[in-house]
Image (cartoon, rainbow, N blue to C red; front, side):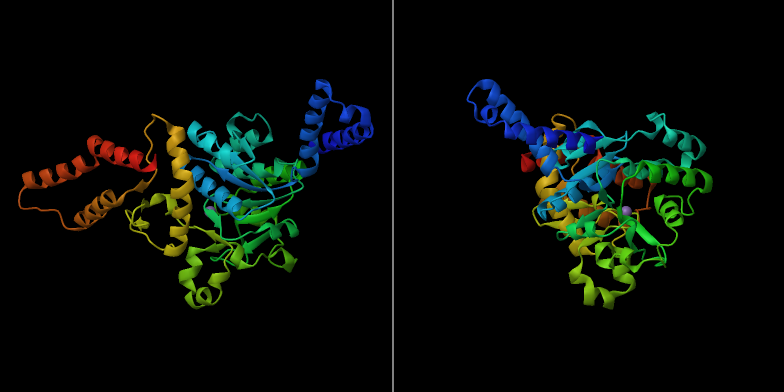
Amino acid sequence: MISEFGVFTRIQILLHSSDNKCITSRCSEGCYLLRYYSAFFFFCFFWPDQAFVTLATSDSYAKGALVLGRSLRDHRTTRNLAVLLGPHVSEPFREALRRIFDEVRLVDVMDSGDSAHLALMKRPDLGVTFTKLHCWTLTHYSKCVFMDADTMVLSNVDELFEREELSAAPDPGWPDCFNSGVFVFRPSNETYGKLLQYCTEHGSFDGGDQGVLNSFFSNWATADISKHLPFIYNLSSIAIYSYLPAFKQYGSNAKVVHFLGKTKPWSYTYDTTGKRVVATVQESSTHPGFLLKWWDIYASTVAPLLVKLHGDQQFHSGCVIGEVAAGVRHLDISQEEPAPVSSEERKQRWEQGQADYLGEDSFDNIQKKLDSFLK
Ligand SMILES: [Mn+2]
């Protein structure tokens, strides 16, 4: 629809530009028309018809999407940024996404009443997958690059648009499969319909979108090497530790990091004074340098925006200042020690002490400190 509209407006602009009298007229109507047409001129000629697309299904993943969007902007992409939004993302996060992305599209598969809804009725287990497949409906773009919300770019990656559907990097766990965290695709309602149908009939061998997409684009491994993206466009932390010499050799060329695995960057806490990631969770397989980079972007640009947009609502950004961070670390150590068992009463006090630390009052204190730091 947009492209037909674009052609129509382009013709109108050309016709109107030839009407010299009106364009240069000083009458208010002329100025109004000039402004009106220049806006459409911009829209038709400079609105990119290619976009980076991501997906946020919760507030946590929205944090990831915001950092990804910020990293693409910081590296001066010339393409549009679009985000698909699940219905559970709260309003302050939606507003934050609107500030960084060109297009924010709510995808409520349950509410859609179309083929996606019917597909979900048959396969309720694939809810998030269906939401992701929605990216094929962005038909006002000729080509897109999908990037998971748990990815981040380290340099400009606009050259990815030179690739064709379906281009992706190998999955580190099974390199004959592509990893669906980063892929090049062509929006098409026809492909979307086929994908939904495939999904409904065959399900997903891994329970997610990667299984569906690998079955659907089943000749990826063998058909066309130009559709194999170099691994540096989807470097996962898992691969770093499974083949460390290769990472030492090629890691510095990395262009996209993918925080695969259960523990995401936003699961950690960040000490803004010492610029350190505080490990409140056990797993630390993520490369510390990339994790720090993620938190650097989040703490400097995304968290202040989120704090502002939450207003009076309570919001824990995940950033703490030095002394609070030290408290968290202390708490970790004390949790690792065996609980005193000399008396039940003493154990209860110990547990009570911990509960106080995490209780409402202490949280308020943390919040106050955070607010004073971030404002
Ligand atoms: Mn991912």
